[in-house]
Length: 439
Image 1 (cartoon, helix red, strand yellow):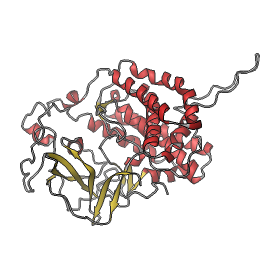
Image 2 (cartoon, helix red, strand yellow):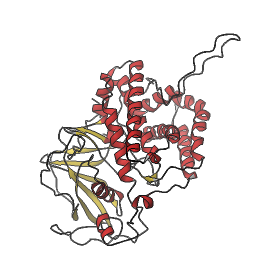
Image 3 (cartoon, helix red, strand yellow):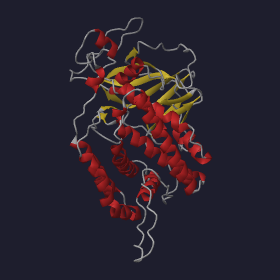
Image 4 (cartoon, one colour):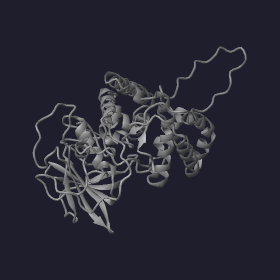
């Protein structure tokens, strides 16, 4: 089972996600969820509370309590079904959702360094003794702004939340990912990858150029497995960041999330080919259409909100290449049977070179740019596959909570059924995952 956390569905009303192991505080997720509520972003499971406790003398985040989303399936199920059926109707909604998420996260203040949090925070009105729900003095973003705390808020949060300085670290991080992918990918795949390393480096080189796009808080692990399709629409979950990347700056160009989402569509196509027998040419056409629709909707939403500056499309391609390197690293470290997916995508992007035409022969048609016209390639791998990132595993009942403090989110009330919302305003979260992730 590919997992990192353990989720419990309670009476089909709430989901308790136990972090395994507990995460030291300060932890970004409570702040992010609280901010999304304040910003009016509802395309996620509503946050109800956080559970904290002291572990080895330090305060830790033990669990998150969110609403339950009826009939929810993650993208490694519903999106593969859509790929097999050739349906791309979902792509416009996903593009809008991703844009709305980035619009909300772009206003998240960049916290100033603070002292380690106390063991418990003040009690919230109407609730039990609360542990800090913010990395800044135990206050929620709303409380910090109300108190005029300049370290957590300002009269122009969007200006404070963004940084337009270029960062050479992005290029170095990508080069390191390529180097590690080359080192851990063995056999025929490794030899093939080594032969394409120079071409991949050329595409990564653009990350070294000065960046003018804002750096914002991003999701950090935005693939289709993090998008639930539920009774009333789509919802994004899991704001814990990329489990395969350590010490990554949480403030990144929005293009990194976009690239992760588009590469996950490529992986869906690979799964459809390998596990569901979808012809490669049909999978290729599906990826082209879905990718184009998703990006068009994303651009349109940013333009509608006068924030087209959030996306620098020149960064999508190099971030996509870096992401496939990270998929290979993930496969080598955790899930060898997953290697077929990134290798299939890379073989599509960097096809075998064809002999030069004879002199005087008519020129061949120009090959389309691999970003715009992917053609999924069913690369051979060991039997079986799985989702590319760790997921949560539900249990049928709550099995006893460790000692700790519960901090409810002030804008949500646990246990109360919220009023019905529109299709694009999900309010429940189902954390169920099938054993093999793909039916």
